[in-house]
Length: 328
Ligand code: AMP
Ligand code: MN
Ligand code: MN
Image (tube, protein in one colour):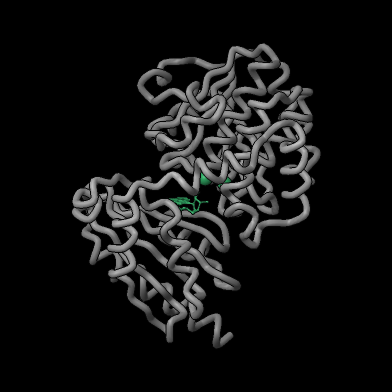
């Protein structure tokens, strides 16, 4: 464990009063959980803390403690903190329009992506950690934060979602240790799984059916991919968060090593979600395309191209990586 970084970050935060916590654009459960749990932790230490994400937060996360405190860019862009803490974000562009603000204020980066570009004044990057929320648990404890039921629930959220509810290859004994502590402190696993996984609209299931109809395979079924156009989202009255988790369905195909979902939302913005099952490092491919992530889950985005063009650019890269790995 990187105890040196934890001690310096603990000392830095404890000696500061005005803190701004930032998460990443297209926020996921780990990001929202990390922001909310650090926010609740610093509130308990009587800090003058604010938190913000330059993106809409999917509505089902609003049932979690601390999430209603997360502000938008407009309300926080003029705030002058003494310290910024960025969580779960591998590069400055991940904080959206806040990127310029990082140059103006002392910045601490807490993250678990191997693709992190170390853009903070202090960086604690632990790619062996399954979630950033798990790192926030360690930090809160190091700062002497007392956990109550609300904080335990907010913190458990990211540990559950970034491990695919304890299924992904990043799930190790430390995940269960921290999760077990949080459950002991009052987090309810069933509340988290029903709120995140069993909260779909019928329109979302119809969008899933469109994605399944659009499936294509390459490399004898090792590469499974699909796409959703902006028109598909509009037709099913969905927005982009409706398709979160869909790429896992593509990876669930027996023959799949790699799975990719190309999704266009809003119009002209293409997000590429990549997953692998056992050995392909999709973060290396995402990184060459200006994105990032983890070996088994990575992504990148394109603006101003049509979806067919992006598919034609990305699929050959995956095909050749799969072939190179098999040859090598
Ligand atoms: P997603 O496919 O959007 O669920 O993202 C999978 C992983 O890749 C997450 O850890 C994201 O933080 C990361 N990721 C997705 N898109 C990007 C991007 N444009 N730049 C850097 N990392 C990304
Ligand atoms: Mn994230
Ligand atoms: Mn994460």
